[in-house]
Image 1 (cartoon, one colour):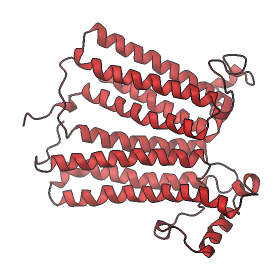
Image 2 (cartoon, rainbow, N blue to C red):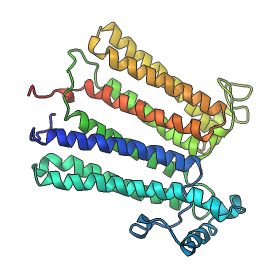
Image 3 (cartoon, one colour):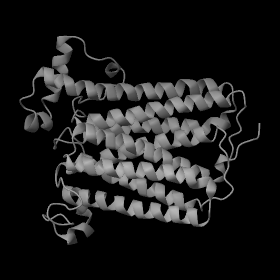
Image 4 (cartoon, helix red, strand yellow):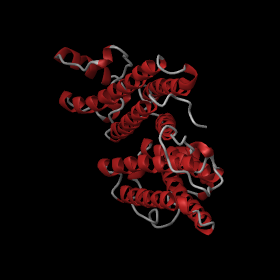
Amino acid sequence: MYIEINNKYRPYIAQWLLVMFLLVSIMIIIGGLTRLTDSGLSITEWEFFKGFFPPVSKSTWNEYFEAYKKIPEFQLQNFSMSLSEFKVIFWWEWFHRFFGRLIGLCFLLPLIYFSFKIKLINLLHYYLIFLLICFQGFIGWYMVSSGLVDRVDVSHYRLSAHLLIAFLILSLILWNYLKLIKIKSTLNKLNPIIPLLFIILIFTQIVIGAFVSGMDAGKIYNSWPLMGNSYFPDDNNIINLFKLSAFNDPSLVQFIHRNLAYVIVIFYLFIVYKIYKAKMFGLYKSVNVLGILLIFQIILGIVTVIYGAQIYIASVHQISSIFLVSACIYFYFINTNSNLQPSN
């Protein structure tokens, strides 16, 4: 359904949403690098106001460092870390939190302004997105808290929830942006359930990818297409794949991540077959772009695992997922009636 927003403000809201899309994309990249550099536990408290400003005095730095020394990550893994080394991981986590606050402000302040210019009922879905952004902040702290007591890393389940919500926010912002701009409608469309199922597969893969990252599962079995000397990880039993505990096993999680990628490719080929068989000319370009991004993402995944999940390769793999998810949302959008815009 087309959003009934005064034409005078539609371009401004669209520009605002585009800026928010870029900011959230950058936030996902920063969050990924914070995880890959093992920086996420460097700040052990949630300080909404005090934490907005970075430490500047030596005493404040020592205060943060002493707090870090009390958690298992330092005691069991980074016990030889110096203050200068601590500052490196601290800055990653601090900037990650700072950027999250910045996103909240950049979303809320224009939204309040538009609320005085446009009927509130037409902006309610934007307020829901803002609430989701606030909830994401809570989930971020909930994730961090899991690594402060009995373990040297955060829970990979909470990490996956944090990443999934980030992509959900990104997708909702993009969807609402697309509803405000003029997109040429296609006469022939797929059943919307098909691209929706594809999105579900992609989001499921993102969750499993977060499991891989959270358990450092990309640093084992650094070969492809085999895992060691066999297709199935040779340190495991295939029966374990059908247990819930499989999601706590690094080798099985990597196996699932690999094979879900193959399933996604097969489903994509099914979509291509449907489109080309029915000669849906208006969908050719979008499905081809989607395919290019999918192939690129899989190649990056293979390179990431071969090189043992090196930080910058793994980061590019995650950055590529932003483009892939965006293409999926656009593809789903043009296969619904949501892209029908007024002729003005």
